[in-house]
Length: 398
Image (cartoon, rainbow, N blue to C red; front, side, top):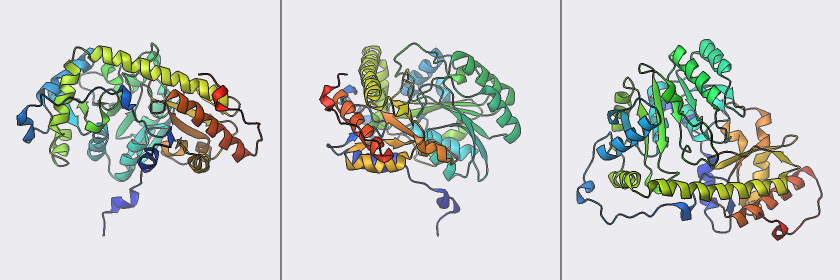
């Protein structure tokens, strides 16, 4: 009845949790939801009337030019003609999947990796080659070995404040990974939705900026983390040998991205307040990151391990001695706390993945962070049969 790929169609746990976690009595650490109070104003009062008509597939020229200028500033060899405006950066993943993946196609991904990318790659039949993440990124030698042995059609990486692990590749790893990609000629899909949410000085030079003019690359970004996510405006810039194919695929998908959102994003980028907005945003989320770090240390210090991220929106937490975070989620939801179990972020199953969970700190207030972490600690101890005298959450200062 349906196409054969429907057998590979999986649901997204994040999307399933989203409806539940939007209830006002739920403390949610689950989705990567930006805080409403940190978003810029959605002012459409000067919207040009001609935007009610269809637009071009590539996107609005003013926005494409602004994006290209930003990418050139990051070191990429990119013209406006190489930028395709997408319906969120997720559409860029979908287009790259359609372009490169057939059933059985090997694709190299980080372990863990962004679950919606894994969902898209899996739908088209990808066979995953996982690259374990360390504190400074993937191992370039392992990437070289995977490419030589499996010849993946695509390498998908999130080198800056990785989702879910929060890892930011260091300068040496970025250089070495880019060199492996260059020498092998393997297409690179670099996903950078969080690069502007930086809280400490770190190297954020895109891998694509280290590639040569004749290399094959795709670089994705979004306005959902710094602007207004409901507009669903992102982009994928690509090398000249790839861009035309992405445009044709988008033509067959949705014709073009909404023009009103593109107009707003172009004005947003050109606004004199844009740099100041980014600084306010970083300060706002840095405060919430620090609040989660304090709450984790206070409540889970003897139960879990984690590394404080230098940017992005997530903590990646491993339960000491292993665990089952899916079962833990059921218990936590009964007490109005939500998070993302870690196993969904791995391409290939392994019982050890059950020890991980991803915790988002952008959506909850500092007070909710403290209360939610106290609940998590309580249900972990209950799951393990550990008895501990409860202390009032209000005693904790953050």
